[in-house]
Image 1 (cartoon, rainbow, N blue to C red):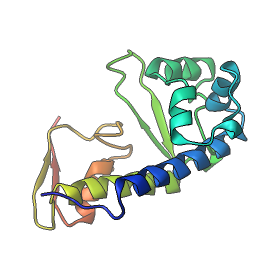
Image 2 (image 1 turned 180 degrees about the horizontal axis):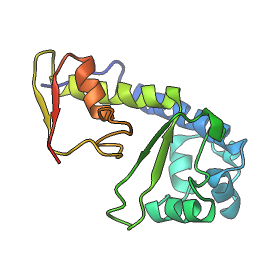
Image 3 (image 1 turned 90 degrees about the vertical axis):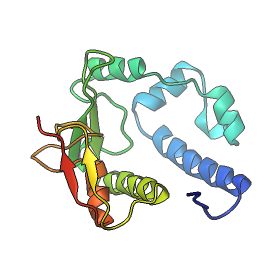
Length: 171
């Protein structure tokens, strides 16, 4: 099944740049992980005017960079776009790759955006009401596989939103 999104590739790239630029400008006005990286690399984010310029000039961020920031600024690091008190959800990675779990905090808006992305993935996959979904992992405190307080994971919320029963694997 092929999913057709509105607009053409050029418009998509322009919309992506507009959203990225908005986030970059917003981030540049705070004292956080990204602002410090801009300064460390001598980059004025307000001098970047195209997606190609951004790709060429902004250094790639590796997971180790985020881990080092979290270790230097416990418990969550400084990779945020909002004041800490606006974050209402906590998930974490398993820490399998680095040996250190990484915290992932969400505001109500960022959580809903992530759910909307998952709903789009399921729609694109052709999942519809009445389909049965089995997750081959238990619902732990992990972003992909679960949340805290016995809530189903984000992916399961989206299955439920399209009317699909969800069953996790047993521990």
